[in-house]
Amino acid sequence: MRNKTRGKTMHHTITLLPGDGIGPEVTAATVKVIEATGVKVGWEEYQAGMEVAIKYGTAVPDDVINAILRNGIALKGPITTPIGSGIPSANVALRKRLNLYANVRPCRTLAGVKSRFENVDLVVIRENSEDLYSGLEHIVVPGVVESLKIITETASLRIGKYAFQYAAHNRRKRVTAVHKANIMKLADGLFLECIRRAHRDYPEIEYDEMIVDNCCQQLVMRPENFDVMVMENLYGDILSDLCSGLVGGLGLTPSSNIGEGGIAMFEAVHGSAPDIAGRNLANPIALILSGAMMLEHLQEGGAAHRIRRAVDIVLQEGSLMTGDLGGTATTTEMTDAIIASL
Image 1: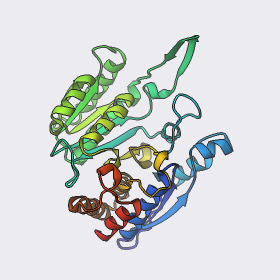
Image 2: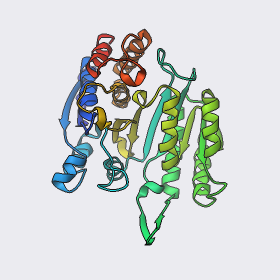
Image 3: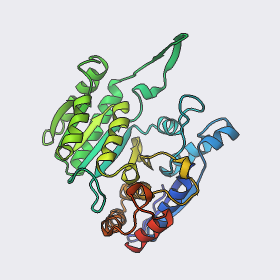
């Protein structure tokens, strides 16, 4: 990221990864919205994903990693991950190689979107570097596969500190650690011990703990009771999708991946939806809101606020809804409406 300050003007160079499936469509929409705010941005576009893997033997070439490291920030469209076989996940590879240890996924009720709950405003903070996502698995004997769950003091303490720092910075009142330490006494026990240690430096923030299965039940009964939740990688992947369902679906929920030294990558929570790729049907809001998170990270809070407000206006007005929200609006129509509301 290059910032040139002269008065209040800053210029940001951002690595852009359009992804595949609906990725190029929602990424183009997000770029249009960000540019419409007037923030000075230069985009460096690179490719990652399945087609790149076929050509280069890796879904994430070194030039992609080097570009993100050089600029310090990236906006990424969804990338297809094969199920059961094929290339390793490009998403996991990016997080590992860039050491993006914290995945932040806010979920809030949006006026105009039908959902089962009101007043949901919570944040899932997911440890992003280890757990079962370490990818350490092998065949013991035919018909028996062993996967290793890796939990370390270093990573657990780091995500714990980040969760409380996030809560303090964003004026949140409580952090809940989600775990299964009643069964995995060593692995999840170590995770809990580290979160408790991190809490000692933030006595003003309330802290509690919840077993993951009970947490799922409580979320679908009383989600308004939750604030910030911190958890291991697998639990975070599952619960963040559950939380998206509380507020209207994956098409509305943004996320960020934060690393040490300020490096960050912003992406939507949803997948690449190849069945509707190229048909101008995808909901761009999740990535647009991820773009707002990115602008906030770049200290462009005014522009971020305008984007969120514009999304709220369009959804509350209700005449334009994409297919996932029960309407017939196209990606282009939704994007143009949001720009018009800026």
